[in-house]
Amino acid sequence: MNRYIALYGRQSLYKEDSISVETQIEYSKYEAHGEPYKVYIDKGYSGKDINRPGFEEMLADLEKGFISRVIVYKLDRISRSILDFSNMMEIFQKHSVEFISTTEKFDTSTPIGRAMLNICIVFAQLERETIQKRIADAYYARSKKGFYMGGRVPYGFGLEKVKIDGINTSKYVPIPEEIEHLELLFSKYSESSASLGDIIRFFRDNNINNFRGVPWSTARLSEIMRNPVYVKADAEVYNFYKSQGTNIINPIEDFTGSNACYLYKGASSETSKFNNLADKDLVLAPHEGVISSKVWLKCRRKCLNNKQSTKPFKAKNSWLVGKVKCGKCGYALTVAKANTKWGRYFVCSNRLNMKTCEGVGKTIYADILEQYMLAAIKKKLKEFNELTADDELGTNPKLNEEKIQLSRLEDEIEQLLNKVGCANETLMKYINEKIEVLDAERAELKKEIYKLSSAANDNNFIVVKNHVDKWSDLTFSDRQAVVDALISIIYITGDQIDITWKI
Image (cartoon, rainbow, N blue to C red; front, side, top):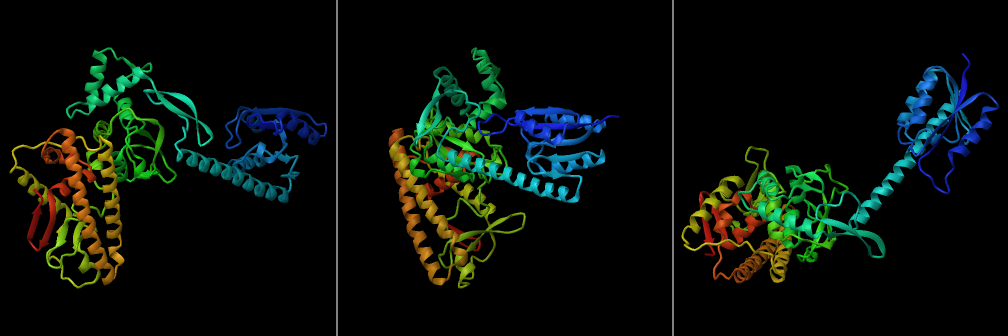
């Protein structure tokens, strides 16, 4: 059987400074030295893999025994993957096919040629991975500036060309008819009894028939309500994502209740699924939100699994931290974690570090204490006849400013608590005193927030019975807010728990 030479050329896309496949073939013809040949070409295909029609045809002819030699203009024209190239060379050797690169002057008929080719393919792959890294870095840098990063435009918006920091990009602009559907969707779902199926039936009964030509589905509705491109992002939204472990690019001061947000996978996130918000990147978007934070957060929390939404992100957290003190020395009780079925437990920070306190006298498991305190709160609230809920937090600028200041105080308290483990006696004294001051400031700030909320709701006295009644649906920060509003301090000694109430 007469065998021929295969001349192979590939060009991923047209560039003025790139060599065309026609030129590649001309160089390869010279190496054929007048012997019979057949040309195989792939235009518009990357060299990252071997899924290319021209290459696959050449490989099929090679396995049939038609080809004696493969000639390419340059090594990376045939493959950029060392794994693919190694597999390819095994096939070539199996069928006694030589491989020649005209530019690098390598000939696999010799051991040196084979060794040099393997070295070159390693550097070709390294170059490709370096390019990919640069592209990824550029993507994350642009995303953190609030640039539109492509993808499907969410329901309710179109695109408008804009410039941000001198860079051409796009931003979302509302489509009035679709925004009306969104407002109806969020309003309906925020009602505690409404399900996604109820909303689909409501839409169908009211001739709101489809989602841009596609029938409504629970998956599509859930996707919409999990997307922060709709929310008027304020301090409450910031704290929600913070409690879920999200990387928030903008400072809390920028969350003024106007702009919406983009949520990206993030460079360190292990999953692209947005039910898991840990290590995702949240950045304020250039467009304004269309759904109030109060309504959006109600819907967002319903979309989360109850266990996930109410579980503190950090294993060593408790919504009682900052309130519980050792009844013997007065130092704060901090939370530690044990490898038992109970997990978290409280321990006197003085005993933990300086060993100068004998502790509360028994193990105080966080889950058990939290259950006890929730029951105590419910019992206390039964003493009041007129009880309403604070549902309007964060709906005016002054409230949002107070929430921002509260978040700063809580961050400072958390940072001090994190230093407890390595503190000496002098530092512990400072930490304890500082936390006392910050906790007092936090309590006063909470009073101011409730006072502002009372004015907004035209109520003279606001307590939190409705919050307590829906305790399982509250976030970690909301539970802390309830405790701050009701309790000044809790002293624990053995089986004795003394609660100082604010009401």
